[in-house]
Image 1: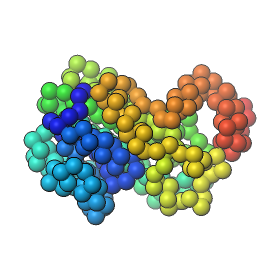
Image 2: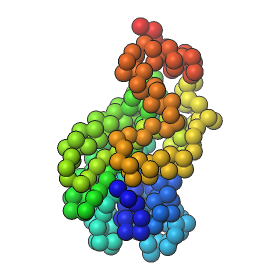
Image 3: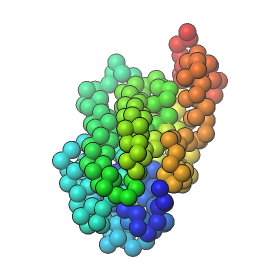
Length: 267
């Protein structure tokens, strides 16, 4: 699908990180971008930095966990711009820590934002995409959906759910003119873990994180080329392939590059 001045795109989690970088990459190509996240003030700051500002790029303050709010935001964007060709379900949150110690509210929050937020976003947008001459869904999952890590059991489970959903949806939509790309980021330099920096597991390597701008450019290219998936950094693809082949081999690789905490159980 080509992205240009006629493209109308909606990005969730657009106030920071990958979502903001993707909105900037789309707007730089002329697209009108709907910016959806919970914080209106942050969205307005993002919109002000895009070509055309808020008049061209609607600010849509909503919580993706709220189905009605998401549907209302998508309808408002489509009404304001005359349609919708691209939706990126990117919004999400994390709470890392051993599952045995994880508060129930953290489990619920991640499930509602990461999993339900994706489903509600795609559900709200899909009718518009199917009515467009061509449409595309982007689901931002995680490298953790390919190989889950200790201290991120629930987070990675929500990302694995996104992976399965997007994989099935790509096949379901065959022949409709709408396609799906799943994104598997590794560690990206965003604010995702700002609230938990002091308790991140030893295997985490935030200082080596890739930039969201690099990932955003890869996502745009994948939409244009109708690619099934984006893996960034490239080692994410290797880890996923190796884990599918032999979990023991992927564990050994992770122990080598991330230390024992990444795969403490042998066998």
